[in-house]
Length: 606
Image (cartoon, rainbow, N blue to C red; front, top):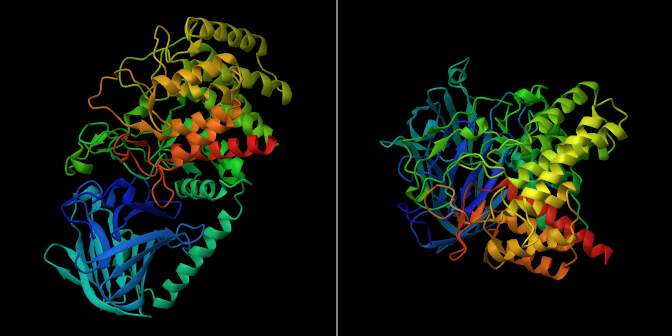
């Protein structure tokens, strides 16, 4: 049944399309309800995802409510295929971003609709609302089928081979019948408003060119996905995660966004709503590892280069996150015009976590270079000077508290994960200096590394229970402790790690393989959901720790929380299994790939 206009579709109802510059979310009902133009972090042109009345959308669907829909991605691509089954017949909608641009034209969403059986009464409704719903655009006609919509510094060129009409609500609409074998096309192209009146105005695309764009998009994404390999039965899912991460890449710089959305809540009705349309330093290391495991080393290396550039070569200037182009000013603000998903307010743009101290960033950057080195590269002189300053900063600051991997909203703590990543920066730095034959203060680094390990093992380890803890002076556990073996602080099968894994499974358990990231009060209202990435971290710990059967059991439970398109959210409400948080979530897909790889490696070695 078609979604009622006054209700929010579940987050699981959305599919992702993108062009490695921006992305859009398309609902099961055929509506583009989220798209920021021209970049991931720009103001949304369609934001009905966060406000059903004011947000704006672009809908292509059968008229009335007497129809159903199903969808899939065309093979291993980012071309979304939605099939409508109505009383009079069936129609198929293909949604994608064009990949045929010459670099001058803005991002172009193409929607190709064709009837496959009988006759279907269709309706198209286009309601752009620029700047997160703040601006109802000025809509102008440029011929029978070509329109422009402009407002502020945003513009869209809209073309359809059915003649659209503007209604009093500043929408473009058309109703028409589609018979078997008929095809209709809709194009939405972003442009700067000043270009619309230049020369002879906007030009019309033609139907054949849009049909060709569909074929080219399928070929483009299929060609890229064919390079991804895992050599296991889990390869199809891992490939979908790889395609999702590729869609979150900002191609001009190599940055990878944490998610394409802002403000999807971690707890419905509360304030746990954050903007994830930025690139986090820690994700650089995770992304490089995941991409390399799938064979996409170019993307891994591009992200490494982006982070090195964005930090400006100075450890003093390192931030924990950056804009798609390397922007440093990402100050948060509330979007008062939007009510928020399921009325979870406030909706936000920007992220104040950019100003936090998160000491794990030092270790993640050094690990990024370490993995790059292990793939056959050596740091340049400039890279090495930057690395030395990073490692020195890790040595100087490792005794300080920070906000940690989870961006703790309260007072800084001495988080064990952060301490271990500082230890990793020192340890990897020593090994890089040795293997690359580089001059470095390794004697001082060794002393700092060994003293830090002694401190962690004394203050970050509960000797009575025999487990690592979340922070010094605490008994609480933290799912981030599952990452300690990934930087070789402790072996996967070390008794300390095995006990910690068992304790995390018991104390952070949310049922059926799901884990909370922590259980202590963080000062924010409402209980957040279980963190999906933590389940995949658990899978890798179990597999590499020797319990392959339990690893497979947790893995199968975890992947059941993807939507029907294979997309993962950040969190899930354990009882209702409702997806929560920004979507799709890059960190979850990264962890999924690493879990797939661990299962493949251990399975092959048995």
